Length: 415
Image (tube, rainbow, N blue to C red):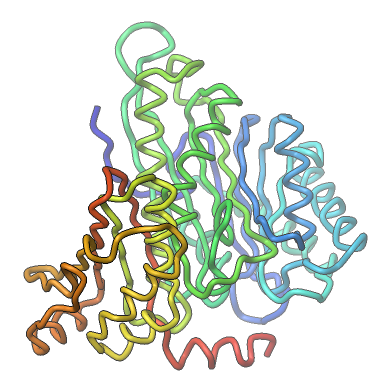
């Protein structure tokens, strides 16, 4: 069945509302709090940072997800990450969830928490509560409200990141089909090197799917999307990806890995890939998106490792910024990635919108047209195709170039 791209972000699915406000968590005159609410309880799945230092909101959400109890709301602040804050940070999560829950008529354990920003300071509870007071009456199912929420979770991002799709599944009634929706928003521009998920991402769906399957499909899809992007090699303390499903579409419940499961997986793959690529393209100070596909690898895991090594290489990233066709840097990044391969069988192509240049083949750097290479490196998306000629496995990774602005942004991040 066809999967259609639609608008609406986190409000694309039935029963979800969103809101944003200025709470002055760290800065004035900017949206810095968001809320997403379902009007009925949701099954929830999540993946979180592998960093040994986990922010308080991550620990709070991990406990809720592990309990398999339903969740119904998400409250997010930017500016201060509530990381490295010890017991006070966990108390803040609990008090925020209790306050928001009281305003929404929900138990505290049905409220998920998200924070992003500077590590170390405590988030002012009074500002969070004042923000909740603004958010609850502003909740709306409109696409505009979803877009404002996506803007409110931005930090150094330069653009909002939303995506949504719709598709048909068999109806629970047994007659015909119903439309199922899946939408989401994410933020992330720096400290991006996911190893379980990404900075902050929230997905909503009205599908009726078994809890265990929801968790399984999310873990599966993350490996091909958010885990395949990098900006700077840093894995955040706050990485969180949450998927809420409220079952309001009225589809026949998905209880096994059948055709309905496969279609939802494809829809989730599309939304997550869209959000992930937008994040890679919006890396701090970035001027180019880098896409590397490794094909012909012996295993999928090795293909992933090789592809991420290229997009994560500081020298490759600097080469792209300078539009310098120094293909030796791509070759080098593949070589130190770890997986064994035969350099004499490897080919590396620079693939543009209309032209392709072979950089490396038969164990040697190839002679190529420098002007044509410069033209290809001037395109916004720089694509490398690396054929290992070892097997059938293939993987794609995304990153961005390394510019002077990245250093400027992070040189005074706290101010």
